[in-house]
Length: 308
Image 1 (cartoon, rainbow, N blue to C red):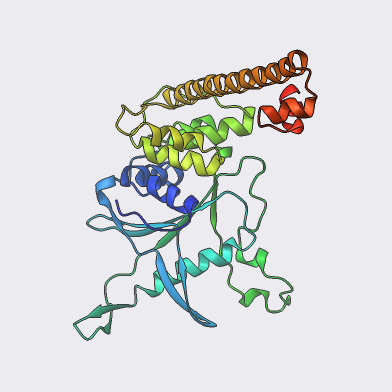
Image 2 (image 1 turned 180 degrees about the vertical axis):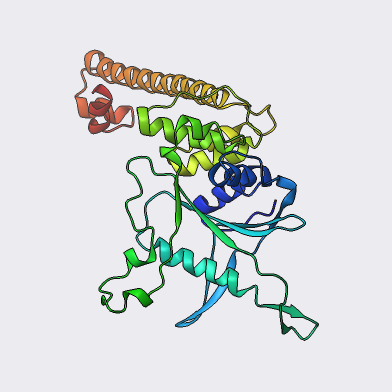
């Protein structure tokens, strides 16, 4: 599986979804109602980057794209991952899809890099927007015409519309969740539970891509304990299920609490002894507080802070 360099969230999402078994599972669950139409061995990497003319030449980049190839079938699938609704999502998707269609017109042949007309059959481009937000439904436009403002009524029939397909992961039903067979199910289950209960009870089923699931959970939940468990376990046996992951998080929390307690106890013991020594000098040697502190190389303020 090829990995792309990008921001932390995109990289984590692509690391998991980029596996063919996970990508095929997402397509089958959301587009084929769980029927195993797309097989992982039929998927191939597709370009995610394209150029367009704006103020100069600019590049745009999808989150992920793959070709689905069979003897008589060729489909371009793209996915976009969103944590928040985006008002301009139809504009973004139409840009990605338009570039993928445009790429079907030509191909580069020869050492001189000359472009040639491509006469191969044209194939469809399909983009899935995976929305992970669980605090509210997607409430932004899903059609191009919903983004455009002040279109004169007389011109409306001549403005082509373009609809995007948003799949609200956290708002799936239990029946839909059962359609997922890959590790993507663990991610979907987390956000579904958080939406319904604001709490998470981990499943006991085994994961395959453990590190990638933990990385994705880390960036989506902004809880770095998921990734820390994975990093700390290098060289050890990694957890097999989310149950084991949370057990290890809890265990490390207890261990850290014990360590902090010991450190605090030591610090408190030192402070107590220091105060006793100052007071002994004042009592036995009849020294003032300032002189007693000076004899022990501390300030009066440090004594009072230790005294509490």
